[in-house]
Amino acid sequence: METTTIQLSKETKERICSFGVKGESYDNIIRRIYSLAVKEQLKEFLLSSEDTLSIKEARKELNKKWPKSK
Image (cartoon, rainbow, N blue to C red; front, top):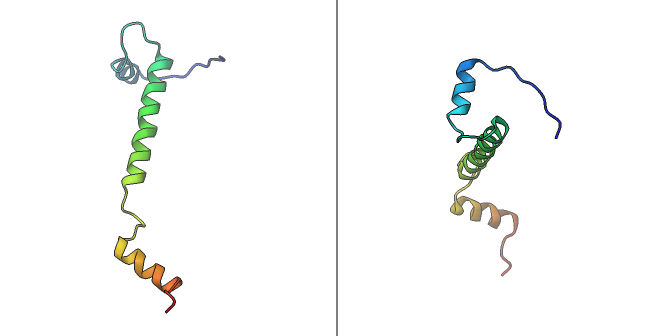
């Protein structure tokens, strides 16, 4: 794996280190934090009520577009 160097303040480095366990690399710590952040974003997206319809509203829309034949 190719590596790179990034600059962090000592405070940020200490915060990242506080998520790790003895002997764990910063790369592993950051990957784990990233994975948790992605899962949290997905959870927020899936549980968001923004741009959603209630079942009752969705049924009204459905009946407008595809009315039942008699």
